[in-house]
Amino acid sequence: MPRSYTIRTYGCQMNVHDSERMAGLLEAAGYTRSESDDADVVVFNTCAVRENADNRLYGNLGHLRPVKDARPGMQIAVGGCLAQKDRETIVRRAPWVDVVFGTHNVHALPVLLERARHNAAAQVEIAESLEVFPSTLPARRESAYAGWVSVSVGCNNTCTFCIVPSLRGKEKDRRPGEVLAEVQALAADGVLEVTLLGQNVNSYGAEFGDRGAFAKLLRACGDVEGLERVRFTSPHPRDFTADVIAAMAETPNVCPQLHMPLQSGSDDVLRRMRRSYRSSRYLAILDEVRASLPHAAISTDIIVGFPGETEADFQATLDVVAQARFAQAFTFQYSRRPGTPAAELPDQLPKSVVQERYERLVALQEEISWEQNRALEGSVVEVLVSTGEGRKDGATRRMSGRARDGRLVHFAPGELAVRPGDVVEVEIGYGAPHHLVSDGPVRTHRRTRAGDVHETGTRPGGAPTGLGLPAFGVPKAPVAAEHGCGASV
Image 1 (tube, rainbow, N blue to C red):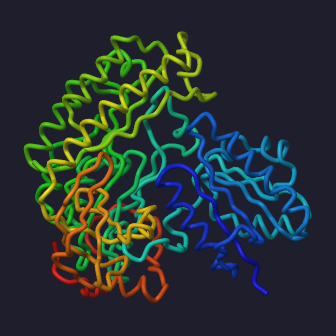
Image 2 (tube, one colour):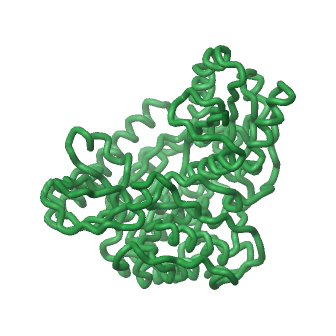
Image 3 (spheres, rainbow, N blue to C red):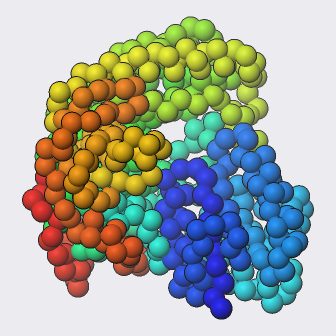
């Protein structure tokens, strides 16, 4: 009988995308997906950004030890950023782990599992640089209606708080034609929305000498038949340029949404973080975006309690947040990570101080988010229906999805046979701090090919593409996109 697998994913969207590739590799090798924890192979795709990442991993591994002891032949694999960082430490602390692999050699997972079985010994293989671009690997896509598309891996920035560049390596860009080929393949499979991924998406093209490559890529996505929504994450303020703003405004299927990390509103803290912009420049970018996209929903990341942060520094962050009027902010308490320059800085703040500031920031942002969402009451929004985003949907008889600006919308489908992947228009009756609610009748309901695909239980492939020289335009043998998702937006 075929062996089964399950993957537990932690961390960012890049890890989610990598897990889709791991699943594709395992299924290509003959494994079958298990929806429960009794799989023959359990893969942990780890994150190393937060301080408790290590404890979380080893706690989960500890829970699995008696399960593995009772099931001869079961295997445990650990990959991702924490594996890249800790390497042999994982097997030393958890000797019942069978495979450890890093961010640069995801493709080796099936071979390492087989080698561990054959040798009856743990296999630790960590590549120091990228061996195979993840997007060249097969994928088992999680969604029938939305897909991740990586434009680059790695990062050239040197932020003092961040461990990612040392684990993901220097930025490597895919050629534009290959990105577009994957987007076209997804659209041909019925996918309505793609999110372009990179540690710093708007520096895309620097490796092959085209600083305008990301804006060109956004515009090129606008010509992909059947593709209704394009998002991207995350840009860096240093590289955010007017041509990207123009491309966002002038390409109909690029969503009016921007996630751009601020990290701190204090120029002194930004300097010590090695963030190569200051608060005035950040706010100027927001002004430029809103001048072209007045209704754009802008979100951000903010770190509270960076070493040496004074009350005046924190007040500067509150001031920028009040002025920026973010739709949403992902707020984090500074996490000291060994191996980063910030870990060695003096004046590490007490937990109690960081916690108190964190709560004040969250309270301010919730007030702003709630005010913005209340302002949408009475408006009609288009929603791409999704799965798993409404924890209370079963009890409330609602469904959930995302508006074009990325806001989460819960709505009541009534007697309509609405499916994930379909598109509806609803009137917002209530705006909460973190979501919008519509309990009135659905205004319009459009059945889509994405909904058809979801209903059959199949998933799009998005044909893998290879590496090559940079070029724009369609590939020599383009995938024939089949329009069937209704009117373009």
